[in-house]
Every structure is written in structure tokens, then in C-alpha cells.
Amino acid sequence: MLALTSSIEHIFDRPFNRPMLTILGPAKTIDTSPHGVTERHSYSKYLEQAEELVDQLRQYSISQLKSLMTVSDKLATLTFERYAAWHSSYSAEEAQQAILAFSGEVFNGIQARSLSEEELLFSQKHVRILSGLYGVLRPLDLILPYRLEMGAKMHNAEGSNLYEFWKAFIPKEIAEATGMQTTRVLVNLASNEYFKSIQPRTLPYQIITPVFKESDGAGFRNVTIYAKKARGMMLRFIIQNRINNPEYLKAFDEEGYCFNNDLSSEKEWIFYR
Image (tube, rainbow, N blue to C red):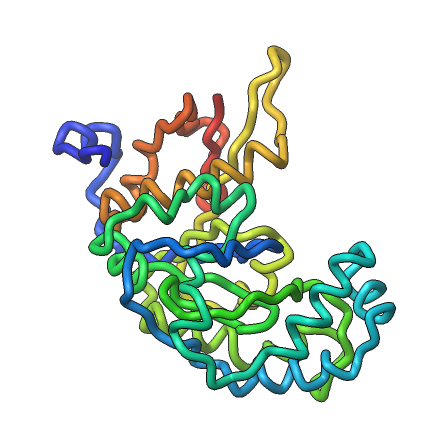
């Protein structure tokens, strides 16, 4: 764990004490292998809505799922089988905590299975994972394997896509998680696909999006695979150091990244290497 000492405060221009919530998106892949990290768990607040979506997805053929999700025949078949077996009354033995189940570049950066139970409990209070199926997840909410991206053009009772389906739930949930306090700060580590689902213009507090860039000698550029992992590393940095003050994010220096004040704005904080 990186120690945040009082010397770090010297990088700040002024005192800053605005508690924060961090959001991120899910991963397309889920690791169902045992982890032995913690037995602590919770359940999604939106299982009823998830069940509604699953009931609709069960009506899709394998070829329709393939088209909806733009996946291979193999993945479409697996998804079809998973939704056929999905049920909302699953137990802890059948499911896995979201932050320990998702895998992919962002979650490779988090390395959640090496976090302590105490660190995971901190994340439970201060982190929310956005999901096409579950809406909003706390890190220790149990999930069954699924595949459903927020950007999927899935017609439903509320409209022609999942943004329409979740518009009455996700922004409200994020607002409640921050207490609707104007002194709060929302740290956005989600992709644009998921960030849009919170309807950021409706929220009354500052939103900070860390952006990770690579130096190529002539300037700085975004490299998606590196940026995804860096977002995960940033979340791990937040969790391990129990950060609840966004100014401390400027001390992030994992794998050579550093904060660039000149390139940053109030809404986008640029880290480069």
C-alpha cells in the first residue's frame, strides 16, 4: 500500500476537503473461479429490473443475441445459455462479488483479488460499478455471469435502448450515493458508454475525469489499452489509500504516470508518462 504522507499535501494549491464517490464500468468477461478473498457480500438493489431485462433476453434466439451484442457464435451461444439459467434468487454459492468477478484491462489494473477485506469494505462505500444488466452495483454485490453492454440497442418497455431503460434509476442511485451534496465530487473512471448513463448534466456536484496519456516525443496521445489499465490502477490507488479527498489523486504515480497541471482542466485531470 502506498502511504499518503503529509508531504504530499505540499503539491496542493489550497486546502481541499470534498468527499468523493468513484464510478467505473464493468467488464465484458467474468471470472467465475473461486477467490477465497472474502465471504462478505450484498445484493444489487435492481434485481427486479435485471430480471425484467433477462426475461426479454430469453426471447432472443442465438442469432439475434449475436447481432444485438456483435459477438461470435460461441459467445452468443454461451450468453444464450447463461440467460436461460439466470434467476434473481441466486445464493452466494452460485454467484460472485462484482469487483472480484469482472476481468479485463480495467480490472487487471485493480487486481481486486489481492486487496484485503478491509480495503474491499472501503470500496463498498465509495465505489459504484455501472452495468447494462444490473444498473448500479456496489463492489460486493453478487452477480451471475452475463453479457450486456450499456450501449446495446435493445428495445424495451421504456424505449429503444438501455439508456432509456435505466434513466429513472441510475442517475437517482448515483445522486443518492453522494447524498446530493454540492460539496461532493464524483470521480469518473468509466468509459463514455457508461458515463452517459448517469446523465451527468443533471447532477449538482463537480465531476472529475482522470485521463491517461502516453508521450510519443511530439506530444501526448491516448492509447486505449494503457488508459483502461491505468483507470484500474487509479481505483486501486484510491482503495488502498482510503482516499476520500480528490486532491490526493494528484499523487498517483503508478507505472510512471504523473499529474500534469498545465494540461488539466477543472473537469479533466491529465496524467501522462
